[in-house]
Image (spheres, rainbow, N blue to C red):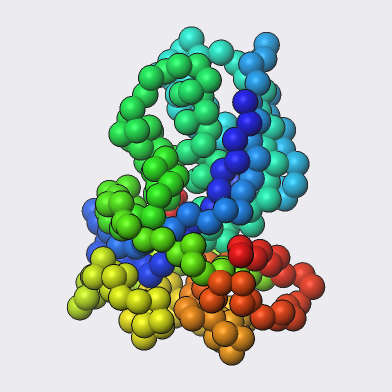
Length: 269
Ligand SMILES: C[C@@](CO)(OP(=O)(O)O)[C@H](O)COP(=O)(O)OP(=O)(O)OC[C@H]1O[C@@H](n2ccc(N)nc2=O)[C@H](O)[C@@H]1O
Ligand SMILES: Nc1ncnc2c1ncn2[C@@H]1O[C@H](COP(=O)(O)OP(=O)(O)O)[C@@H](O)[C@H]1O
């Protein structure tokens, strides 16, 4: 069985408060984006994992695909051994949630392939153990998210009338470090209200709290965002804790912007 874990962007992101468990309560809007990895799983005599494409840092056992498998295997000891092939295409540590998506798709794939009959809410509870971004990829629909990101309210938000540009300059932002740079604050106006406004008004009202500290550390990210506006973006922002920056453009009107050859650039028309 093969699946294609997609990435996400955050449309606005506010860090509301620090919690006693060390995490932060936040509010954000998750929006799925069709840039994907490929994840293939076949039954096998023993557990095997291999990957191609972008190399994933860290120990093999820490790969979120394997962690998702082990999490289910712990509760379902009869889950057969599998051979996993991950083709990694989504930039890593980019605020695009690629690792979280791999994990969520792995849970769903195993649930379907081996008929575990887990409900969406059970899958979301497993996903929350693997990462704060992970539950979103179980529903994978535009939503207003609170808590650590696991409390989700679906939104009727359709941006298919626009084109997207995603630029990743290769900078890796550590999510834990990014949270430590912030002074949490509840905004005067909730994102849930702000997102109802027309996209043309978002520039003045929709913001990501991580931009200030992360742009301070990596000024080139602010420059990328500015270049998107100079070239016709209706709205531009950093996704999550960075470092990918996205622009929302009128349909099929993404200017031919020259980026450094080392940047990864994705166009969604
Ligand atoms: C900031 C966001 C916004 O969508 O996304 P990314 O930019 O990473 O994609 C997420 O909240 C990130 O989610 P995720 O990347 O899954 O983070 P996790 O692995 O759960 O946590 C990494 C570290 O970030 C901090 N963390 C994370 C989430 C949260 N609500 N509060 C926190 O304080 C903790 O220090 C934690 O140890
Ligand atoms: N399958 C995977 N794909 C990407 N990153 C993974 C994966 N498994 C584990 N990781 C780890 O997760 C972290 C990055 O997660 P990712 O979802 O790409 O970034 P972000 O949280 O910025 O959206 C890195 O520390 C990486 O080593």
